[in-house]
Image 1: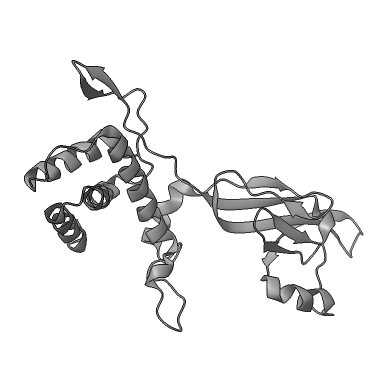
Image 2: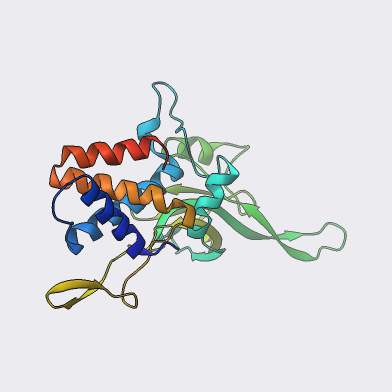
Amino acid sequence: MINIDEIKRFVEFCANKSQAGSNPTPTKFNLAVKRAQMEWVMERYGNPNTYQPGRPVPRIAYQQTQKITDDLKFLLSKPTPLQIDKDGKAVYPSDYLHMSSVRYKYKKKLSCNKKLILKEVDVTNYKDAEIGHVKTSQIVNPTNRYPYYAFYDDCMIFDPKDLGTVTITYLREPTAPEWVYTLVNGRPVYDPFLSVDLEAPDEALNEIAVRTLSFLGIHIREPQLIQYAETLKAQGV
């Protein structure tokens, strides 16, 4: 966790250093730091803006390296049951960002004593264009032993439809940070009890702070502040 007041004090220091004028209001700061945190998360998750022509692979992506996996591990859910209705549909978790794994336990009969056991298998994700081929295939046709699922706008659809429950792990959206204050002599004073800190590793503080500074610089149209923030970002601060 990163203390949100540390980010705000860093932003105020840089704004004063660059002679950008008055410090950002709490409302503007909260908007900027929220976007900065999400930008940091999405860069590690996989930013499509870094794709190269003919090669839709981001420079940085989730689980591409152990460092990136460690950076985002705080967003990875524990194994979570997901209910599937009679039509094979399952609703995404409310804080869903990215699916990591989907597994299903099916009943398998042992040939030696005909005893039934539960065996867990990965559920295969298929693209919408692949559904017809899979359903008509004699080799990869969906069964309880080899189930499939596809992503849609408001739900996931599973095949076969009677799976009942699967177990998923997923990356959730980070909690929105907020710098909360009380007014003392007409000035906003940090409230550590009501404020919401940033969900990110401590070593990401400088990077998220610089991104916050950049967003604020763009908002208040201060070229010097923007240049200062972008310089720090390019240096990997």
